[in-house]
Image (cartoon, each protein chain N blue to C red):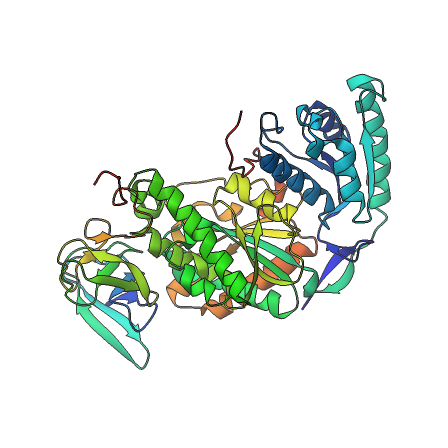
Length: 102
Length: 395
């Protein structure tokens, strides 16, 4: 069975976006200019959701479009789903602002 | 690189040819019910108890809609609760619209025999206006007469990957042809503001972009809330977007790559051609009327997916006089609402088209609709009310 497809938006990204439904254990091909990166999804990655292209430690910056989309709130392993459970946005966070409740 | 439009006396070109009756109310509604080819607005706010700034914003919206190139002539009635304020007096609105060179008539129940008399006279005037407007023929003009407004909504990751890049291609093409293109949604550029500021034509414009974001971000922080419980909205998260920054960085793709000429307020008209950022709010009941008031003669809603499922009818958002298009890159959304959607760019996700090829198709779709083909939502009478973007407290 051929690899499932995920896209990166910029060479500096450390996550890719699934453009097919990916099941746990399936191989994923990420087209990169001149080559194709392949990795194995460690869990299901629904259409439109992101998977980690490398191991990410807690607090590490997560990049898509070549820009910061947040930081890892937990350690994330390569091939894992990256979403609100392990990615934390850092902007406009009233809960973290001075006087705000955590 | 051309479309068929209605050339107005002020040199602008319309994609439609309406008679507009403002503000809302029973007089406007009655005239519209009676006379074909007329448009009015629907909103719950007449300006009562509003601050001077917000009243001026309402006036700007009404005047701007009247001056839109899709409007042949205008009737302003003086029966709105807001007309007691100097900003919203019927004569003031009429004078500023007429300054753009089109015919404007004022209906005043105090002089025209009360509400009933104003309705009867309004019907007579509107019939003449519509008949006169119908004598105008479309002529071939360049794309520099297009003014577009866009919003992306129910965004998911297809929006950032394919839908918005296709719109971005369209925006670049229209700007390169000398046209005007508007984008906005200040909350949805938080996290992407530096990338936009780098595209500003001047340090002043860059600072205005950053200032708009700072004000909005400080407002968000002042709530004490975790923004993730507010925005990205649940449908964004369900569609794979994980943070406001990710949403913003996908959203700005719809603005293409050209220099940003300035920052406009809601319903403010640009003074030059090119790409402008509008400091507005994302709400679909608010944003399109604002773009139309700023002069947009075609508007687009680039739809993600989120909760769209089953056989869905997507009604248009209130853009009053500007034809409204639905576009999506999400194959599930398109399958669920094919007969409502004007343009599909999921081909980019499937790998059968590049964003540029999809953008070229979108351009041709927009030109067709600008030239008179109805957008899908224009085949419906239904219009939702406008939620005007007003920011100050009411008293």
